[in-house]
Image (cartoon, rainbow, N blue to C red; front, side):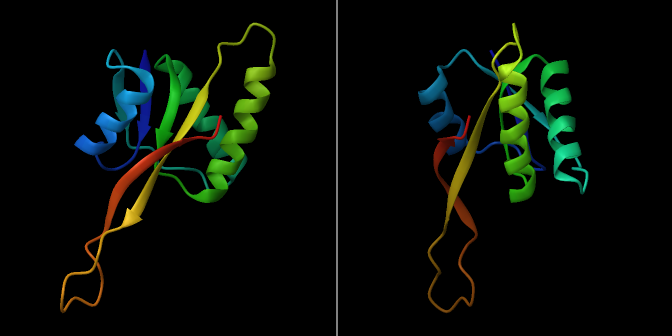
Length: 118
């Protein structure tokens, strides 16, 4: 099984371990640094095209909210087509790292869990 990871960054060890507990250890994570179109519908189709071309049936990664909304809509359309292989979208959920004494801003974000949106 192939998982499409859309991000400029590689999946962290924590993200990978957490994902594999959900889907099993036999998955291959394919990382693609994709520049999204401004139009959410076009971006969603772009993501689906990349996933299908690489035979990835689980899509995950970091994307703007408007793209994620349109992706869910597009997946519903594709998954409703007769005979289509089901595509899924699993969203990484991060939480802010605690601030270190004396810092104005915290230390970025850390992975918390995955949310299946489709």
